[in-house]
Structure formats: C-alpha cells, structure tokens
Amino acid sequence: MVAAASLPSPNDTLSPDKPYLYPFNSSIGKPVTIMTWKEAFLQASDPTADMLVPRGDWIAPVTSQGQPVGTITADHASAGFVTGGCDDDAQSGAALLAARPKDIVAGDGLNGLFIITDNIARQYGTGNWKVTPQAGTLKQLQEALLAQRKDAAAANNGEPVTGGNGFDFGQWVQQHPETPAPPQAPAQSAPPFSFGPGYLVLGCVLVAAVVIGGVRLAGRRRRALASA
Image (cartoon, rainbow, N blue to C red; front, side, top):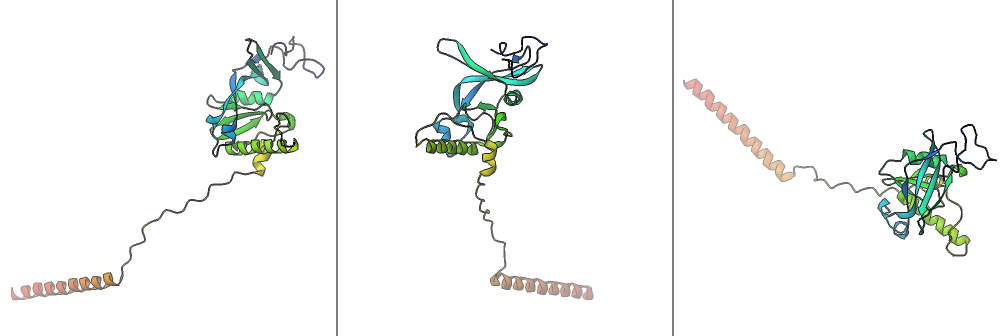
C-alpha cells in the first residue's frame, strides 16, 4: 500500500498532479492498536484511559529517510484481507514516532488522532484545520465529545449522527478550563496552651514557696558559717 503511494523513482518529485503521497522508497514504522471511547468512558464521572477499547484497526507512521511523511491505517477483514488507507498527515506521523511505549493512541475517525499519556490527551491529525495540538485532561476530552454529540443531534432533529466535522480540542480546552478541585478545609490543630486563672494562682504560690525556701536555705548557710 505504501509502495504504491510512493514515487516510483528517486528522481521524481511530489506534486499535486501526481497520484503519489510519499517520496521514493518510503517505509512503514511500528504499528500500534487504535483505541476508542464507548459509553463507559463518555458517561464516567472520572474517565480514565483504561476505559478505552480497541477500535479494531492499527496505525503506523510512514517515514522517508527517517522523517515522518504520513500514516497508514489498516485492519483485517473477515476474509483475511487487509483493508485500510494512507494519508500524508506528517503531524500524526511525527506524533506516533515520538510516542512512548506506555502512551495510548486513540481516535474515533472524526476528530483526528489523540496521544494519551496518563490523564493527558493531545490532539493531532488536524493540520488541515490549522489547529495547533493542545493538551487537555481526559475529563475535558469527555466533555468535548459529549458536547459534539449533543450539537450534532440537535442539528439532526435529535437523531444520532455518525459523520460531521471534527472539533478543535485546543479551542475547547481554552474555552472550558477544568474546574479546580474545591479547597481542602485546613486541618484542625490543637489550640495553643494557655494558662487560666487557676494555673496563674498555683504558679504564683509555687514561685513564692521556692523563693521563701531559698531565703531560708540561704539564711541557714549564713548562720552555719557564722557559727563555725
């Protein structure tokens, strides 16, 4: 598939009037499974990456001389044939090359590609919309997806919609900052120790006793010395 979409000769150049996407001798990088979201993720009070499920296909970067030039997606049909497609989305190709092994690649076929690291999702594959990739939390991604579904259903008289235009996740994050957690109540600490009137009287008595005792002892020492 990639070979058919690559220039047939190193002397050729890419141009809009040629049916090629990639430079000569482009190659496929490491494929990864594409995950997606279902109702468990969309309706969760605290959505997490482990709620995502396999979409049924995989994606890999396409490179030329080590540089990303696009992506390829494919899945295995029931008859054993591989179906899929190629694109020249170098942005997503670069994101796939930079992804770490523990990162999750997710998408729904409409809103580009998301690279998810822990609780943070970053959107790619939206270069044609001139959208700068923007990070947001999984909660913000969930809210953006639900808002998209609601708007699409409203435009379609309440009927479910499978197509439409993708959203700008970066714009959503800027317009819908995540609500900070309510401040924690300060821990209750023991009140500082204070001397009440009773303690004050007792303290004065003790001090007086110590002073009188000291005077008596001093007098005894002086008397003892005088009589020696």
